[in-house]
Amino acid sequence: MGYNKMAMKCNLCPRNCNTDRSRSLGVCRTDGMLVSRVARHDWEEPCISGNRGSGTVFFAGCNLHCCFCQNYDISVVPHGVKLSPARLADVLVYMQDMGVANINLVTPTHVSDKLATALSMAKPHLNIPVIYNTSSYEKPEALHRLQGLVDVYLPDMKFCDVEVSRSLANARDYFEVATAAIREMRRQQPTNVYDEQGYIQKGVIVRHLVLPSFVEDTKRILDWLADLDRDIVVSLMSQYFVARRNENIPALNRKLYRHEYKAACEYFYNVGLHNGYFQEIDSATKDYLPDFDDGQVEVLLQKIPYIFPETDIE
Image 1 (cartoon, one colour):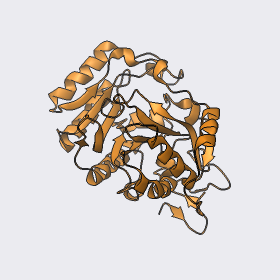
Image 2: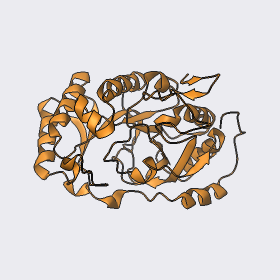
Image 3: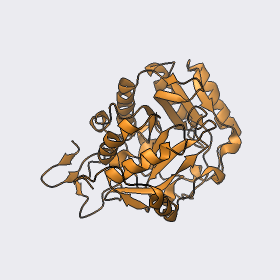
Image 4: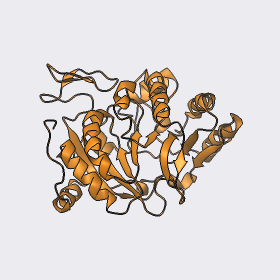
């Protein structure tokens, strides 16, 4: 699923670039699971990070390439340590022993097939939830392979308007693709479940980053979410900052105005949504970005024992 077995050409994600990743790089610009950071992260939503932190694994590369990407250091020119599914399974079990509240897999779409293999190995050894942290530019059939392996889906809902998604991510079909993906996530995890400390154990939380000058697109996204389910949990984020100046889209070359974020929050309630997280406008800073250091991953790997046998999948 996702591959032509004869040629091993990748059509795992909606880009359908049909690239033989053993010979050349596809849209995601990777030929395997490149891991750029493995660490506790304290800046996710309260039900994810809490006081224990979230055990994040950042995968390098991306199939969407938003022009404003705040993790551009690993998405535009991917770098990291290449891991096999078995070695990643070792990492996930080790992270659990660090005492984190969950395993948080960040930007995993382009490696979801290999990730499914790793999770199949690790899942019987995990007693904390696995979170799939995605842009939502996913094929439902790829997500279906993760059923029973992912406990919490943390999808972005980035764009609604076709021209907005074309200009900001070269993905005219983003809304159509993302809404189908989120419906599949909800099918797998229809109800949010929390433990006695308030940490999420199962379910879906939809994230949306409010962009400067694009509040009307935010409103259309909130319309869709309210139509889907007014009880859905939405994380409405104000943390946009200028990661890279874009002369073609000058509207993005500034921070979000306070009145823009206020308008988005008010509209959230106006359409009947009531379960959500909001951010302080001061969250728009690079200070919350993790440090993507390949050396950090390499040093950590030296401490992690080998538990799972290697498979034929690299």
